[in-house]
Length: 530
Image (cartoon, rainbow, N blue to C red; front, side, top):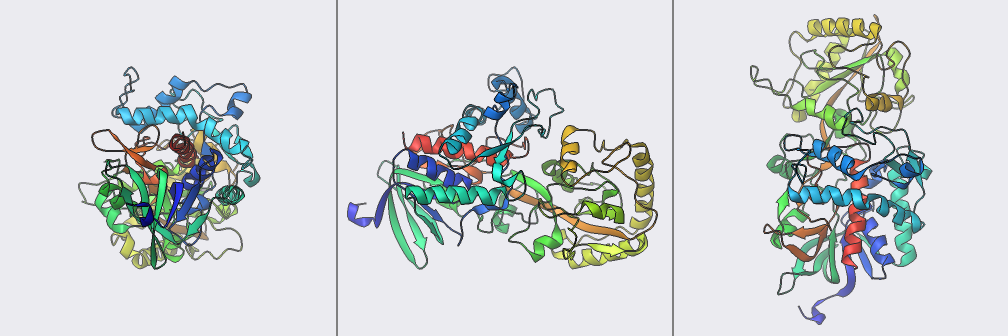
């Protein structure tokens, strides 16, 4: 294209205004280049703004200052074992991973703390340190630093507003350094020169299309495709009801990247959480996954009345239970799941983190309440009838009540002793830590207490949801998009959930997603401005 064909010119054009987009913007601007951010939604922040902004940062300076160590080889083994359990080989030069995934997690270890410190040194953030909060698999021998890797915006005090604070601080920095952020603007195509380098983009702003030249390149940070049912059906291994990603995370950047020759990977992978189905239907914009399942006198059963997993299992793994297949019945017996609790566990209600137990004074529209288990069963059946459109027309088994009574009797017996012989509830460091956020009970196992002999009882219905998807254009260790022949596409970068994650199947700890993205944003910005 000729110079006259462009409507305006910047050094770096960034699509997306979550931590991936705004993080890239402030780092690139600090290098002295001109930057512009375009955001498809009518407000900034993306999925980041809905998060608590925990960041899992290996070998961070706070961990080191506490006198602990986080050796590189051990950290990579921990990440690789969980990322590709079937391929993992501790003695292999890439730990059994595909080379691009190994280089990706190695770059994450090498630069994650450096990246967080860069945002701090720019005066954007002060960090708090979750010094004793454990990784999700802190009990595994591969985890040589089982706690101390999580940081968060200090102002949030570790609460659910961390993402809002993070976005506000990044946006303020963009304003200070003169980085414009245009909302209601989406990239519709990338523009290449004769050699295939990306040199700009066509951007739809309202009813107008503007052509923006990007002298150094374009950074894609637009999130995954959680909110596009067709793409979810086409690419993902399992059927999800939706998710808590930003509503604009529809994956339209995938077709745009494909047109310029991008390779794709990990399109089948999603980062998962259980979600209260009625909250998803009623409030799809602000709904969150149920990241913490509180309560002691509570349990989760399937529609056959059986417990199927420790209720305190971290959300990414708890959501795996939805997809257990029963070949005899030809069905997913655990999809959906039903959370039950008694009146005593109402004290664990609270706002934030998708808590299924409502806070005091909150409208509990998603909760079934009854004075007896028989009436609770009737109420659950009625709610399932209302939810048939998103549950695969699931209904309670005809023996649900009888089986549930036996399940509760067994659970209560174990709770009195404090040992869950079936699923080990409360036996790992992370189960204890997640439960403690809304408080734990007394007794031999603070995570377990018998359900009361008398009502009222409460229940809600949970389905499989996404935090966001984790597949997209494959990138190298600099977050530069690559072609199928491994050659990078000059001028094109992808960070965050719109790119293929090198973490594979894993969800290493709280802050896994944003910790990785803040690092990727930093690495991409440093490379594009070098």
